[in-house]
Length: 311
Image 1 (cartoon, helix red, strand yellow):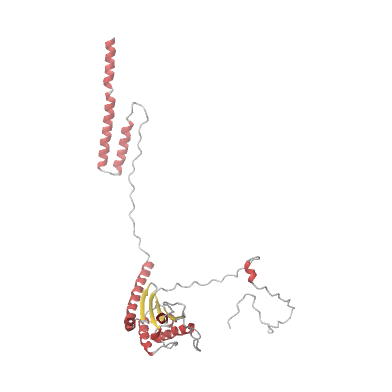
Image 2 (cartoon, helix red, strand yellow):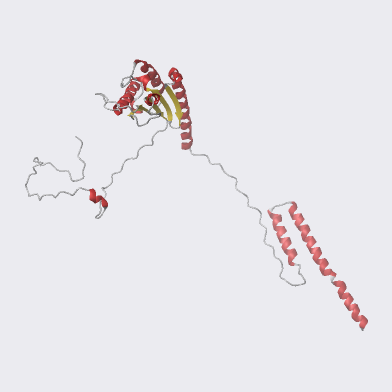
């Protein structure tokens, strides 16, 4: 009896290793499935790999306890879209082409002005510079005018006409600025430096018009001593400030918007602006048939706030 019970125990011990062996074979099978799936990656084999691993681990029980292991499905990486280059509108390309053409014309014009004014630029009496807003030609006033005068001298006419011939064929706006030093002037013709600087700018504008530059491109401005570029306490600085500047503008102004008429704003009771407003005069009661002394002809009188027509 004892011997039979021992044989049964030995038989049970010999069968236990098969559980571990089966688990090992299953894991080995799953490993080779993974290796095979990674040999060629595509969406179909990703799906096969996922199903194989899930089915393999579902058949494994650890000591026949615990829930089965479920792996999430493997999704392939997203495919990034190829960027598409969108061509700019034709209007933008045309605007860019016009801008490049404009820059080239400005550079060519600046070179031509330097050539015709080369003797004066070499002596330092004329300076030609280029910037983002165009070309600036700065001419010392001693080259163009006598002291305290606004009439162009004979030696100034030829250089200015040469500049006018260079800029006459273009369409860029031109602004002529007159500048003086801070020494006051008080003559019958020029009561102050404002009149002197404005007259000098106007003299250059008139010469440009006579030389063929259209008048609608020209602007004359006098700044007196308000835009100094040197120290007015020294003679050299005052001589530098007495100048005429010709600005050839490359940036066109945006078209002005059409002004829209608006109703006059109403001032409410209690606002602070009422403290500085004059009190309205009381209107006398007009009798029927009476004639206004200020308007004996009986003409219609404009309502308060309405603008009168220019005379």
